[in-house]
Image (cartoon, rainbow, N blue to C red; front, top):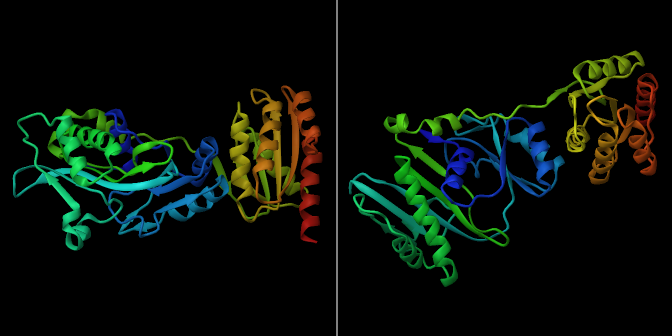
Length: 370
């Protein structure tokens, strides 16, 4: 059984191999949510069970949540060598200094495990073997004996890594072999294993293939394949006014108010009850980066959702947005005085009446078209 990179990395991390912070997204909205929470440039990586995704455009980078949304839209649903991309790994972008290659697999001819390592990572090892075979190190551990840390360090030395990296690279090689052995793997591979400026030695990619006949011994691995994060409630529509509300009913009512005033909703986006400051930022990041949107109508009646959290989220989202977009806010309910004070200090107008706010949003949108 082949495991997606995100699952393989969770297994590697469990066994002590350092990985970059990353989370799975099944939609552009989830990708934006994750990117916003991480607050750093990210790598957006198609999760497929075949190689060559980088060359096919399945790995790209984003400096902000807006870029993340657009790239996630591009990658999700694309086909890479016949396999459709259904989910993404959103991961902290590594500041890479050097790349290495480490793999443990079965040598069918020798009938034993083989460790293959190279000082040059991020390449197709088959091509490297043809062009520069001297750069590839092979070692055949005795499967009847323990593979010891000093053997792994010797492999790192033979790879030609600098003296200060012999121990950390050797440690990863030793742990990768333990993953291979513990989980009855056919292949356990890191390409590339990277040296980063701020994280040290990290597995930037992960490949794990487990022998099917051994899966009855590894039910925990099978369970990992069924993890899925809940999507936000977001629907694209044909208009130019994004409608956001805290609750499906309130969001639909806001859309009705826009239509009543002869406007056209561009989105249905329900942030749900109890939306946090970060949830507001994520929702606004989504609609700010949906090109048809000219005006945002944020319709919040605070119950569990607190108006001051909403206001802080709005202020931060507007500060971070690279797009000059107009927003009309209806804000009332729990902590409304504090929320309204925050908006006033930031120079952001608001309404208490949903009807007035919806009418204002349509008028503003019409003025932008004139």
